[in-house]
Amino acid sequence: MSKLETNIIAPSTGTTITIGESGDTVALGSGATQTGFGGVMTPAFEARLSNGTYIPTAWTLLEFGTEIFDTNNCYNNTASNYKFTPTTAGKYFVYAFARPASSSVFNDSYIAIYKNGSLLFRCGAGHNEWFNFSNINGIVDMNGTTDYIQSYYFGGANFNVDSGSDTSRFGAYKLIGA
Image 1 (tube, helix red, strand yellow):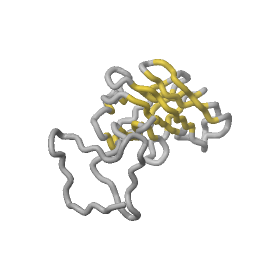
Image 2 (image 1 turned 180 degrees about the vertical axis):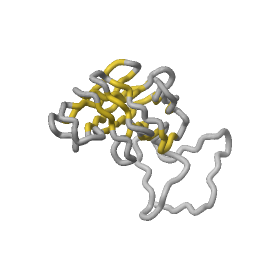
Image 3 (image 1 turned 30 degrees about the horizontal axis):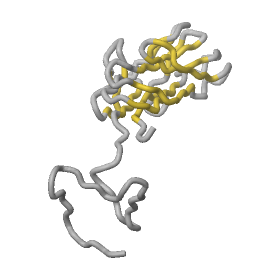
């Protein structure tokens, strides 16, 4: 085996450099790092409730109005919207969690992810478990143009969802290689 030492590798023609052949594994040396290639897990966002959201006895859109981050400006945190509409097609890991703001809530509560206005999946906390978070996560295929997700909450009584920075979040990120 021979060793090639150089500072720059550039193509002699065109713009493509091929390292290895089909079926080869290209490995970095111990302690080496890579930059400038590989997948990225964006678009991605995370938001939290700005204010407690009132939950009547019906599915209610959660108003995650305070963005923690939004890498590609794909999350709309405005009134009556609260949609994540990624501009890149692919599979996305999505999650949401919330909890009632009061210990007086003694009914089942559910949190859900909706895609394009329809229930995709839901999960809930049981009776008398106000101190437990309702949380949901899963993988969603998004087309990169019109698909969007939102988070909804349902409770068996009228109450508010807690808006504490550690109690209610909604987010998603693109999976690479999936």
